[in-house]
Image (tube, rainbow over all chains, first blue to last red; front, side, top):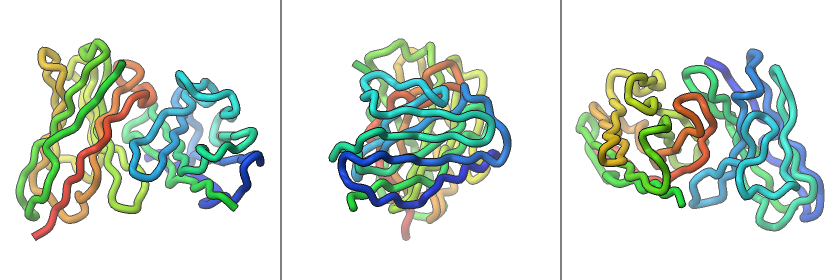
Length: 108
Length: 120
């Protein structure tokens, strides 16, 4: 199984600040198969980024993804109040599909 | 627009069975792979199973293999998850999710989830 480890577990920031979230895979994965999701309490996850760096439909350009091989990053350039949530990375190229354990972005 | 609506959740005793459904609309259902993902209370996301666009390929998480069966009816635009021999650790919100591709795409649309509680 491809284990994905996200760091940090919790990120405490203020609105307007920059958030940098990390996702590290235990083995190299194709960038085509790395996605990021946002989940707010009581809601289903929402796709933010696919193919490591492509924004999904309707996602603001303050969200960006980068990386390759085993190291991937989600960056939120300037946090808006609605961005405080839990973020998950996922690899979807190899069975079993796997998610990271999540990074919670909370208001400082 | 795309809508995915899960149903069939509830409280069930350990060892019993339950079948979840996911009604899809707003896209050509038969062209896309479909997944089940679950989330135990207060925990992260766990992928459960996937079925390819035509039902020919199915994959399962080890935690459910041999107990759960994923299926689809493309004539009814509906995805199913038959869950047998349920255990306490199967307690979770179960989401259906649409694959962007036939099988190995990201999950671009999700349902609102249905809660399954396994308890005596």
